[in-house]
Amino acid sequence: MKTKLIALAALTLAATAQAQQAPKPEQLIKWRQSAYQTIAWSTARVKANVDGSYNKDDAARAAGVIAALANSNLGVLFPAGTETGKGWRDTTVKASLFTDGAGVGAAAAAFSKEANELARVTQGGDVAAVKAQLAALQKTCKACHDDYRNN
Amino acid sequence: MKTKLIALAALTLAATAQAQQAPKPEQLIKWRQSAYQTIAWSTARVKANVDGSYNKDDAARAAGVIAALANSNLGVLFPAGTETGKGWRDTTVKASLFTDGAGVGAAAAAFSKEANELARVTQGGDVAAVKAQLAALQKTCKACHDDYRNN
Image (cartoon, rainbow over all chains, first blue to last red; front, side, top):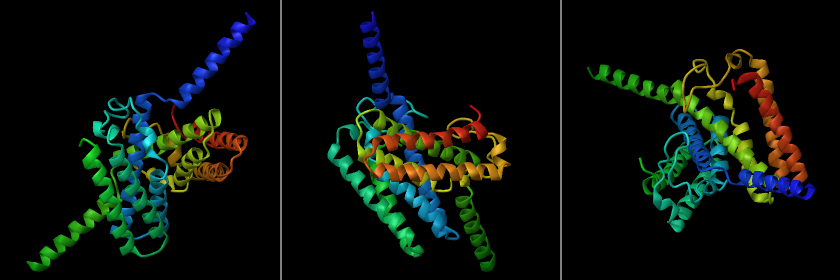
C-alpha cells in the first residue's frame, strides 16, 4: 500500500512537472500573441519618439524590450501541435512556419540582428540613425509576416 | 489659399503625431495585457527550468525579457482614461492603481529590483539561487495583483 502511494505520488509529481514544461496549445498561442503584441507596442513606442519629441531613455527602454524578446528564442512558442487554435484569438500563423525551418531560422536571425542593432543605436542620441534602424527592423517584421502570417 | 493649405497640412501632421503618441484606451489595455502575459510566460519559463532540467541559457533569456519589461516603465500603459475598457478582454485593473501613485511606485520599484536580480542570478549556474530569486520576484507580482488587480 505504501509503495503504491509512493508510486502514485511520483506519477503525480512527474505529471505536474510535465504539465509545467508542456503548456497547452491555447496557452502557447496566447503567449506568442502577447509576445508579438509587446514587440508591436515597443516598436510603436520607438516610432512615437522618432516622429515626435525624442526621449532617449524611453526609446532605449522600448528597444531593450524588443531585443530581449528577439534574443529569447521565440521559436519555443511555435511547437508542433500549435498550427491551429485560439489564444486571445484564432492564430494567424501559416502552416509553412512549421515546415520551413531554414526560412524561419533566417527570418528570426535577421530580426534579432536588427533588434540588437536598434537597442545599440538608441543608446546614442542620433535620432536619424534610430529612425533608419527602426525602418530596417520593420522590414524584417514585414518579411516574416508576409511569409508566415495570414493577415 | 496657399497659406491655408499649409496650415491645414500642419494641423493634419500635428494630429497624426498626436494620434501616434496617444494610442486609444483599448490599444493601451491590449498592450498592457500583452506585456503582463509576456512576463507570465517568461516567469513560467524560468520556473520550468528550476523545476525540471535546468538550461542556463533558456532561464537567462526568459529572465532578460522580464527585466527588460520591468525596466521599461510599464506605467505608461496606465494613463488616465484607461480605468475601464476592453483590450484582449475587459481590464482587471482596480481603480486604486490610478490614485495610489506612491503605492504603485513602490510596487513597481520592488518588481524592477527583483527582476533585475533574477536576470543577474540566472547568469550564474546556481539553480537554488535562481529558484529563491524567482520566489522573491513572484512575491512582488502577487503583492501588486492583490492591491491593484481584480481577480
